[in-house]
Length: 387
Image (cartoon, rainbow, N blue to C red; front, side):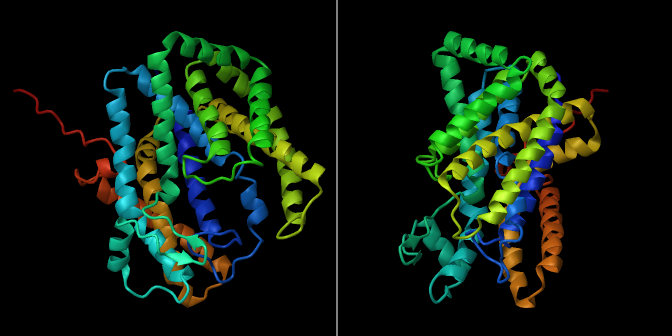
C-alpha cells in the first residue's frame, strides 16, 4: 500500500487551479455570487479549457484515494470517512459559506440589503425563502462550492454499499474495468463513456450541483470516481496511462484549440448550427479524458517523491479548499470601491486569497477544536518514553 506521491501532487495542483478558476469567475459574464463592474467575455475561452476535466480529475484521484484508505482496513472506514467529510460540510454550510450568500444578496437584491450580516445569518439559518430577485430566489442554507464534499461522501457511500451488499459482483465489475483499460483501451473506453454521457444526458440535465437533479454530473463524476477506485492498485493500467501521455497530450491540445475557437466565435447570443453543437459536445468529452490521461501520465513519469513541502500541502489543501471561495467573494466585494483595473486587481486577489488561506491553515492546524471542522486529523501528540 505504498503512497502515490504523484497523485498527491495532482490533487494539490488541481485544487490550486480551482482557486484561480473561482477568481476568474468574478471577471467573466457568467452568473456568480459577486461580479466585477468590468466583467467581460475575455477570460471565458481560457476558463472553458479547464472546465471539461478539472473536477473529473479530482473525482478520479478521490476514487483512487478511497481505494487506498479502504485498503488500510474496512473496520471503521465508514465512520472515519463520514467524520472527515460531513463535519467540514456541515460546519462550512453554517459558518464558512454564509458570507458568500450575504454579499450575493447585498449586490443582487433589488434595492440592496441593509440589515447587516448578523440579521442575514439568522434568516439564513432559518432557511428564509424571501431573498428573491423576481422569480430568482436564493436557496439557503446552501453548500455553494462545498458541493464537491457532499458528492464525494455520497459516492463513497454508494460504492461502500455496493461492496457490502454484492461483493462478488462488485469485484467482478471492478476487475472488468481494469481488464478493459489495458493498452490502448485506457484511451478509448473512458472517452466513449464520457462522450455518451455528454451526448445523452447533458442536453437533458443542467449542471445544478444540487445532488438530487444533477444526473449528467453524476454520470461523469461518479463514473470517474469508480474508475479511480478500480485502477488504484492496477499497475498495468498505470503503465498504459504513462505510455499514452504523449498521444493524450496531443489530442488534448487539438481539442482545446477547437473549443477555444468555438467558444470565441459563438459567444453571448450567437447560436452555432446544430451539427456543430453536437460536434463540440463530442470534442468536449474527448478533451476531458485526454487531459486527465495526460496529467496522470506525466505525473507518474516524473514520479515526484515525498518531501516536507508535499506533506504540508497535502494536509493543507482541504482547509484551503473550504476557505478559498468565501475569501475571494469578501475580498472582491471590498475591493470594488478602489476601482482598480482587472490586470492589477486580479493578481492581487489571487495572491491575497492564497495568503489568507494559508494563514488560516496555520491557525487551524494549531487549534485542536478547529482541526476536524476543516477535515484535518487530530494532532498527534508525542508519546513520552519510559526512562
